[in-house]
Figure 1: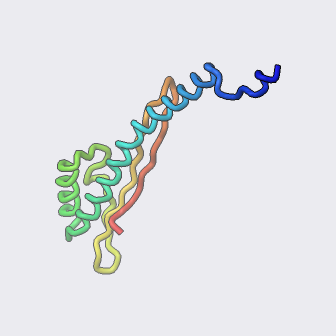
Figure 2: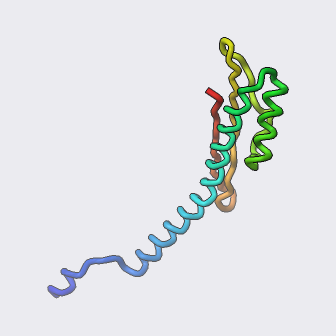
Figure 3: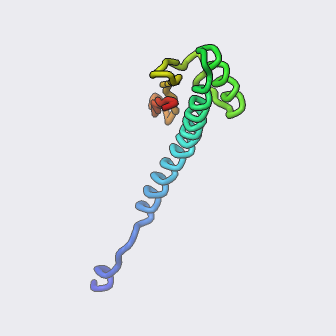
Length: 115
């Protein structure tokens, strides 16, 4: 009786549940990380595009950077280009959906700009 009270640990079923949760989390993280990497590339391309002087030039610079950095979620037409003082400001907003299972999706909303 005393031996049973001293034993502590994780049961096999508990280990399976923990493993499944860890695997599910790993799958989600593996799908989210590429969208974040793409967001960082969009942010860099937007800052580079802000060097343009006209709206069409800004969008062209962004599209060229998008080809190099393999950006598919957003294009130059989706950018909002404005001016603050004498500086060109480029801003963007887009969302990505990640299919989890069945009807469940994880929606990632990204927004940023050249400032």
